[in-house]
Amino acid sequence: MNKTNIRKEAKRRSPWTWIPTLYVAEGLPYFAVNVLTVLMYTNMGIGLTEMAFYTGWLYLPWVIKPFWSPFVDLIGTKRKWTVAMQLAIALTAGAAGLLLPAPFFFSATLTCFWLMAFFSATHDIAADGYYMIELDPHDQAAYVGVRSTFYRIASVIGQGGLVILAGVLEENCKSVATAWSLVFIILSLFFTAIFAYHLFMMPVAQKDRPLPGVTARSICRNFAMTFVTFFRKPHIFRALAFMLLYRLPEAMCVKLVQPFLKAPHSEGGLGLSTSEIGFVNGTVGVVALLAGGILGGLAIARDGLRHWLWPMAMSLTLPCIFYCGLAMWQPDSFALICAAIGIEQFGYGFGFTAFMLYLIYFSRGESQTSHYAFCTAFMALGMMLPGMAAGWLHHLLADLSLFGGTGPQGYVNFFWWVMICCAATFAVCAGIRIEPGFGIKKETAV
Image (tube, rainbow, N blue to C red; front, side, top):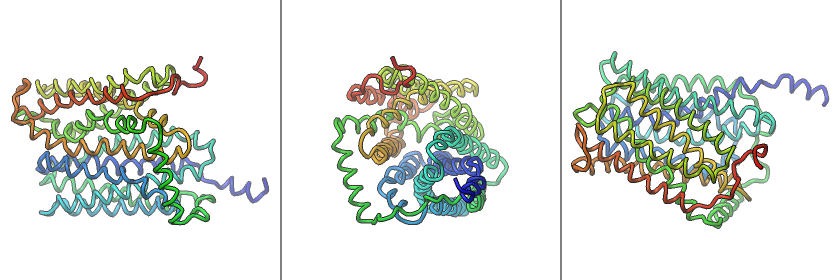
């Protein structure tokens, strides 16, 4: 290595200076768009049917991002895309905050949040691409735990800290709209700071440049070929059914759990404050989810995906029964509510491990990276469509006297419907085929 290269290597910034902030920035907009908006619109009086349907559309950019991700390679650099998207997220978050007190806030802020979702999905593409370009394979492996940890920290901030902040502001401001407006303005200021920080602290990678000889025509041609080869994979329809339906119970729950926690007892809910919801979801729920995911990874590494598929499917689905119990008995004990949701989230984290590993399993072979992107798009679609219908189903089931409960039947019936949806998870598990031993670490394999 010559002296020039030695000096360049010595001056190379430590990945610790940009990976933590980059992956907090990657996670926060996702949770802001898909978690904060649900509770915010509920608190501002938007009906469950409209809230679930319109916020469900906010998943769309993550569903379709494989269609424009190749063009991030063609135009500009990953670094420029990353910092530009952070500035765009700051602007849309700020616009949403300013528009929340307006009479037409619902349509105006939905537009802002859809743009934020698009910018966030593009940021995911660019940031992950930059990570792989800036770091060599050894450092990519060394820092994968760091990026994962700080993405999870973003989850705690987005589902916990910001919700708790909104609850405190709701209690001290004149209106709910003002409280949530301040939350999104603070989020906007945070992303402005992140943009400025990364503009100076993210290294300019030598390999970070548009791919040579690549044109829009060649991208479209290669994309079409990749698309065709994906749908020619063996057992493709069974695999697609698994991607779309394995998480159906959770997809049904995701849009109504926070409104259920917030709704007063007279409306069939648990009557928690906004701050309490932030604590139970953003701390208890997230910690349990991560613990379940870690245990799931260890279990599969020992015995393989095929061995654990059915136990994990039951772990993901059956704990939803706790929501049925909460809806039927409407307990006042906050500790009991935290325990029930903690168990449900632990089961979800444990069961979700099998799902993610199956996506890797099905993506193997030629064009693995692109095929995995298609798999994650179908994963997002499987969450988007049921979530959009959840509010309508709640309304449809509200007046039916099907199960016991101390309050109105809407949430009771809805969560029992979620339990019925578990049959879809079991059906798609029965349809897929997995090679014995897949997922077992080499050192533990016999």
